[in-house]
Length: 265
Ligand code: DGL
Image (cartoon, rainbow, N blue to C red; front, top):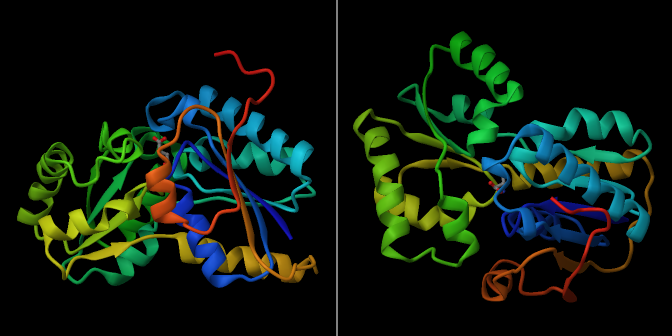
């Protein structure tokens, strides 16, 4: 099974980590679109274009059987169009885990950390209207401006990152929020920092495992052949922090800079 996975940068590697822990026999081609990171502060049109350029590259160069959009922001902007356009491909997206958060909360107060583009997108807004209002849940959300860049720069333990997060999370703590949705695939990388501010008992909802399960189910349904072992090929379009890559997925086979044709913005 050949799987293409992409994100604006390192975040989608948290999804890759879940996939390789669950499935054996998958060949992963990962693109970190760091030339255009962060996606979360771009328009829907820009994100849509980047998503199509990358999907076409993965299909043409690597003959993938499945595409995993390991990015909440790109899913929000492009998943419908990707599915309509690539009908023969398994296409899996990433969405903020509002439903599991609603099931988990005891105080009926949840916090959602995601990018501006995800929070403003129709997909999230519809989900919020349906789920939160039905269940009498109070939702506090935060677009976390600048946080993806701190993570891309490997500044996870830096004071500035702590101060940034504290400013967003303290009001949630005061409101008695007991469950936080990590609505961006970069945020599992700062789980420890979130716990430092909100305490170990805070429930953090991430989606990597659910995506891996879905991929396995769909691949089996379509009788796609698994290989003997996993392999992981990493590509990036701008610059990448290799120390962070090593930390998240130490067992990669290659990590190479690429150019994707026809991109000039
Ligand atoms: N990791 C991404 C997400 O899940 C995108 C972050 C960004 O580039 O802003 O939304």
